[in-house]
Length: 75
Image: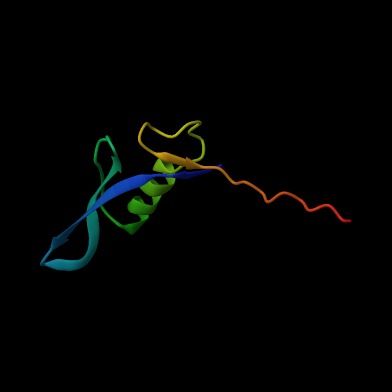
């Protein structure tokens, strides 16, 4: 089963360091903002929040089942 998770990503730009990737990531519909200080921390957050270890998606998120097409019988 596929699960669609939605997040709000806020990027904070410091004019003194415009290349630095900082901000916070918030799961939707409700969730606490998780700050990150660099690209690796953002990737780690995304992996943790989108982990398949969660048995069911939080309320408001969609599950999309993988339905295989029915096998055709040979005539």
